Image (cartoon, rainbow, N blue to C red; front, side, top):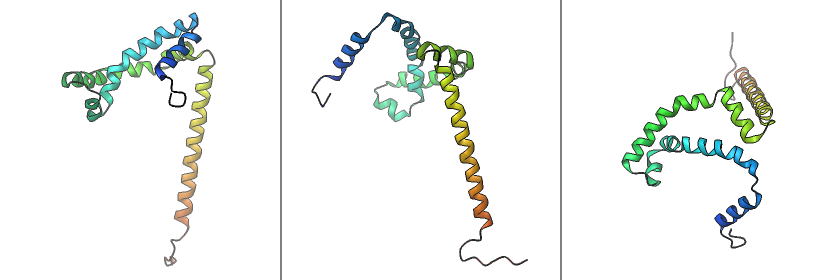
Length: 138
């Protein structure tokens, strides 16, 4: 840490060890599986220059791009209700599903209100004559 001069990695490890509880293992296994499962496909979705700058060899680069394409059906399944709810409960507890659904509803309402506002603004602009334009005569 720049402020204290401590090594950030050592500080993180020390904090994790100090705060560890056996119940954390319940979430650690699904987390490890999920992150290791998606690591290569996620790299395949990155731009080619970024993959090169990450040090991927040309064969590994091609494998990452192929893995990203092959992973699409798995990603779709992971986003479906039952799996999503399972992972949410497992990783963030029983309230997580309710909180996420509430956030999604709020987001939809915000988008709808924004769209209505844009429609209203567009209608006002269409109804108001442009500055300096001659009034229409019928």
